[in-house]
Image (cartoon, rainbow, N blue to C red; front, top):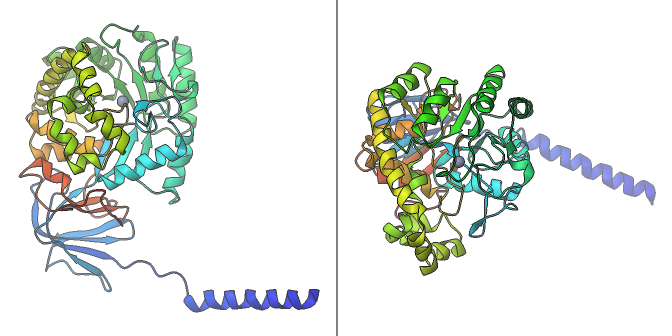
Length: 455
Ligand SMILES: [Zn+2]
């Protein structure tokens, strides 16, 4: 009895092995050729018409003109005449796992929530995003698993917890292990070392008082954060609001201003310093706009491109009279309107002066900052501020990749990752056409857009 079972098991193992041997190694997917589209490659060069782009594995291996560029043997050719291709969007300032249901919650940061956010971003064409602070340490595991090919969704870059002053910004309710609070330079240095040991992609600090409500981080503390980061070859991004703080941070060596200057017009002194130090500037116009956009523009709430980004109860909350009443009664909204107007003028002035403008939204930070939709909205706001659609696209692709030191993405050139959007219409004619997604490709894999063009 025992012997026969053993023999049967052995025979079945033999069948399984024979089956594997017969099938051979799993066939690699064929190369993909996208032919005939207008190509905006993210470098800022003029669009190339009737382009051909060849994808092999997770990379772009060739770019040229359809009909002239040779198709690799066995390639799957996809006709994309009449369409426009742009690189996948890269957000250098977003968040995940901070909102549960319709409100911020200290219990929102779970592996499932961050994973769901990554999937949503990808389906909205944001193929890479940065969780810029307020992360539990599980983010490192998820990021590393993703890099080994074991987790789906937009590629996660992370700033880990980030560092704020005690009793100050960021004000979100979070777990104690979700943000560091540094009272002294020594504490700040130890916190940076802890994040460096996790191979954080960038470090975040907060320097603000939320219209006078909180104490600000002291100069000795933010100087220590920046100095310790640079010892570990890490870039530092700062939450900022005031012109004077922006100048002090740039003087201290900050690498990225993660929001607009919103109290005063930027001046020559700041512009010179930003350029001299090669500082990146992320305007996040969506932040200030989010305080009033749904009341000023209620039509947004009936747009399917918006609606598919939020769960039904969240949409119902934003559509409710109670929400509208709350916005209309909130004294901060008038300040945010003024801040938004200054932020628009400042990004235009800085761009015209040659400062590196990157891209981010602060989406996911609270229930009014809508991941996925927010990135397309930000592009529209940047164009509204006076940047050309091409400038806005370059900010959201090449420049944000440069900010993250992610040399493998951001432009559509041979050797780069195959992260791209096939659009039904040309965004240089109307930036809102970035919403007309026919296909999303990420790491050479086709992803169904959350809201496909024309559907
Ligand atoms: Zn943020």
